[in-house]
Structure formats: C-alpha cells, structure tokens
Length: 299
Image 1 (cartoon, rainbow, N blue to C red):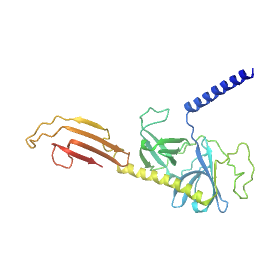
Image 2 (image 1 turned 30 degrees about the vertical axis):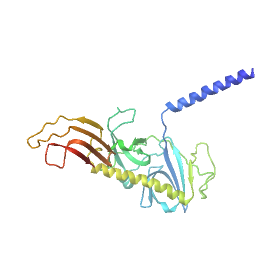
Image 3 (image 1 turned 90 degrees about the vertical axis):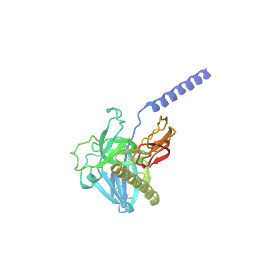
Image 4 (image 1 turned 30 degrees about the horizontal axis):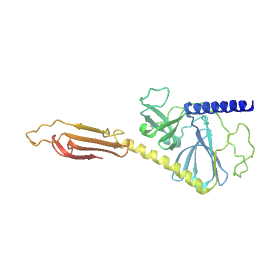
C-alpha cells in the first residue's frame, strides 16, 4: 500500500513539474520597470526612473512625473525596485525631460497589435540596454523592449507631445531592513510596500553600476548619431553568392575574362560594413563598364 501511494505521489509530482515547465516555456515574457531610490550623503531622497547619466549628473523622472538631477558623487545609497506596472502618475514635460525625449522609428514590430514588418514609432525615454535589447518607457507609461538593430532612426522632438494621462499603479518604496540610516526611515514594512531587489552602499559598487548605465546611454547616443550619417541601415548587398557569367570580348577588350565570381559580405546596421567580390566584376574605380578578373572590397 505504501509503495502504491509513493508511486502515485511521484507520478503526480512528475506531471506537476512537467506542466510547470510547460507553462514557463509558453508563457509571455514579463518585464518590469526599474525604479531607483537614491539617498545622498545629506539624506536627500529621490525615487524614480533614471533617463540619463552624463557629466557626473544622474537625471530622474520621479514618481510624481517631475524631472530631478543629482550629483553621482553625492550618492550614499542606491536601491533598485521592480514595478510590473507604470508607477509614474503623470509626466511633466519640462525642459530637461523634453530634451531627453526621443522618437524611435522601429522597422520590425514585436507588438501583437501590429503586423510583422510594419514600421511604428515610439515616443519616450531610453532606460537601459541588455545586450542588444533597448528598454524604452513611452509617454503613456508603457515599457517597450526592442532590438537595437530594428531601430531605423532616433530623432529629437521639435516640440513636446501633448500630455497623456497614463494608466499607473502608485507604489510605496520600503527602506526597512536596509542600511539607510536617515530620520525619515520608519523601519516598518507594510504589506503593500515595494521591497528592494538590490541595495548598494559601497561606493565602488555604486560607481561601477552607474558607469555601466552611463555607457549604455552613451552607446545609444552614438547609435543615434550614426542614423544621421548613414542613408540607410545597410549600404551593401551582404548576400553570399556564387555565379557564372557569359562574357564576350568587346572592341575595347579583346581578352575573354573568366566569368566566375564569388561574393560575400558582412554588415552591422549603421555600423561596420563590407562587401567583397572575388572574380569577374565591374571595377568601380576604373572608368570602364568592362568586366575584370580580380578582387574588389568595399568598406
């Protein structure tokens, strides 16, 4: 009897584990907005999303929608919270936040409401990058995750957009059970409070984290500049091809060129690109339409 119960229990456990893994595999990926709580050396407290770090200044949009700046050298504690819904009540498009607002033109859509391959536009702020995934918070409070190389252009807005009251869920950040030793820290936890997932109090760790975040902002700024320089994301044909050509001698060139070529290329959108042809091809640097046998590389 015990063996039978044990066998049934193990079989049921196997089925439960299988269904659990199946649900994880097929469930949509859930992303969260990173909320930062910054406490300075004089116990000043700033809570919100970081939209830029430059020249030792961190720019945040706080939970009331106001834009604030803080000197990164004055940060004593840096806490990170995760919110699965927009925590910001309303965005106030002041001069500082408007200067950092961008319009992203996306080539390929991962949005369920748009057909694949359609272009769409996002107006918002860049929050961070994970590998080649760009996190953008739009003016309606929605978080978008797009592939860096699906972005065709990043443009500064000529004027701030009309105010949109986003749907939001207010949050209260808890500082209980942390190292924060300020008079406003009540050291109590309520069931509705949001608890930190990361607490940094070491100055080396804080500097390293903010430097990495600053590098991400700088990387996207450089990418945006390249979208102005390049007329399109990829300038060369990067398809690998092998071909045979039927070439006849011309009055200018009585020598028959072997009609064989091999073409290959590599390109990073708005980045390093190359195209190489081995064999018969029209040389771009030669003032002639005749085919020559040789090697031609474009960079």
